[in-house]
Image (tube, rainbow, N blue to C red):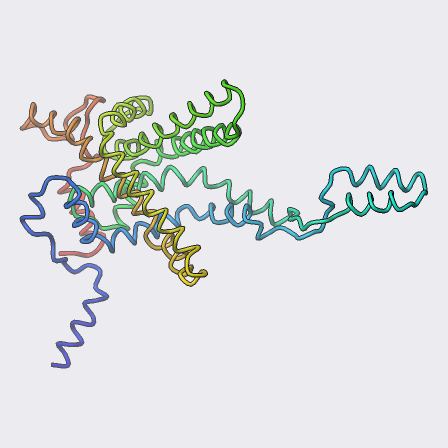
Length: 351
């Protein structure tokens, strides 16, 4: 009996043991909300592991957040009015003191606390800037893991991450820089035109908002296509624009799910006097980012499968993906699934 209990305890730490799998009814379900929640629950541990990879892989952004939050800045007290230096200079030059001048000096000399950048602030900004080199590869590699989870394929998180990172680094690295640049430009345009003004200013503001929402939906499909097909960046952009419109219903549902989780996160941060703040801090580190990504991948993959993958195999039922050479629709991976699983088993010493 004691040996049996000990064996059960040891199984908790056996990362290579077979899982319980999914039932036949789960496997036959259409890709709707029911399958999404069952898939999410069954793969929750792997989604948490993927979130940890996302956080650690994009570690430079932690330094950027620290610099922006003021954690590395020095505190100083400065006059609130920009006229204080001029007024002070005039008073010093005239040498006259009267109730009027003293009152004006006191009003213009009111001070408030300000944060002044230190040397560490610029060091943290420099480290944070490295995010442009990690953003694309990490997004592509985790999109590969989440795509396999959504499609029901067997997943070994760390091995699949390394495999996808190496396989897509040449395309995902430059695209990550482009992706950050587009997002930063659109957000900057929205921020600078957020105040009400002329008709042209309002038009420019709402145009950028619409473009940002459209690009947000396009990003659902960009990284999934990158790890699924051999396409140029231009074709990925073109296809993603089409999918953003074709999959509008699924995109909206994913967006509503993301908004709901963001609202819950803010409620945890600011409700009940901050008693739930530890949960709010732990959520992004443990599961929040990968849950966002899984919603987007689940919304995009089945639309891509419906439009690009299924029609091809209906026309070419006997053709294996690895032998198809047209750039428009190519294989799901550079190697067959059998070869990939054999490589995974070999690396993990699985018989």
